[in-house]
Length: 148
Image 1 (cartoon, rainbow, N blue to C red):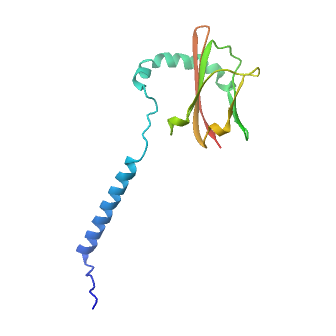
Image 2 (cartoon, rainbow, N blue to C red):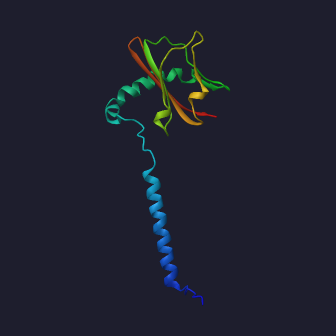
Image 3 (cartoon, one colour):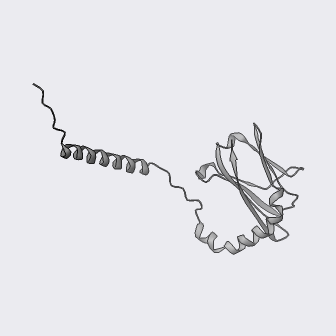
């Protein structure tokens, strides 16, 4: 003898509520498993120095069109303008994962190029940030690029 469940509106409502609660619990579980990376660890002190950054961006505006980033099968080639930095850094910043960032000193070859192995990168969006000092004057450039 089989019993049939009555599928009235109350039964359907109860099943819908249980499924909805299950979905909410599943989404909470997934959200606790996500890594939360801040774009900048020390954002507050950097915010206080922002006027200096604005001046460095203005100083480097003349070089913006001279920077070229190209990708070959094996290499990422960063062509720099004709500069003679006293010091400087190149950061290849991955917004979605801080562990994929590449931070290096400016050290171009005789053709003002820097080379990076494609194996260091994962496909996706990166931002290059180039900061250098020349004769006591600061320069800063950044732009987005996509690794294929």
